[in-house]
Length: 252
Image (tube, rainbow, N blue to C red; front, top):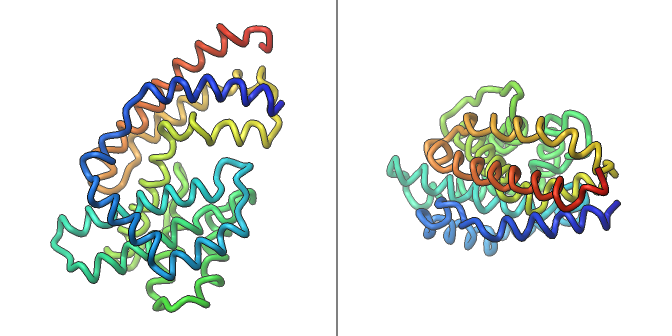
């Protein structure tokens, strides 16, 4: 099974490589680089990343690599949104670290039912060992609780807390674009040992679900750039669907 999906994934990677990087990374290059710098040097994120690395497995498509990508993008969104309203650099720095910690922990219970709720509860316990204020821990846990698509959300008591939730959500849903066909879908299909025939039966519904994400982005920046992530993912998915039917017909 893994060998079959490895072959299909190779084709998917060839398709993905022909598409340009989403405009978000070029138009907001400095914010993305600043976020990455915070993530790689701040002692909180460095320590928490090591902890998460010991808990997350990459065999389900939502492991450490996924968490790191979400953390860096969420931090960039936090920088962008706060600069738009004139927040101080010190405030921005702190909020970037908060949203990055939320991102590192958001899928910590990914293999369990109601993983967002359970992940939020678990995060609250883990973060007691970190020098965060109670309201900051609350913002992180609420963001984890609210990161699933098509689920009800809990309201934040502050605009600052709401922005943590929104930045985490948007960064996580950016992954439904090219990343979905670069990594996620193959690790999940292989882990779940889904026969290729069944995989192709589910494919159209999966594409419809991806398309619906396009209209759920929450931050101003996410609403501007998120649809491009999704449109690119859909274009890749449609092309790959034809390739599988054409080149892997013997498996269907």
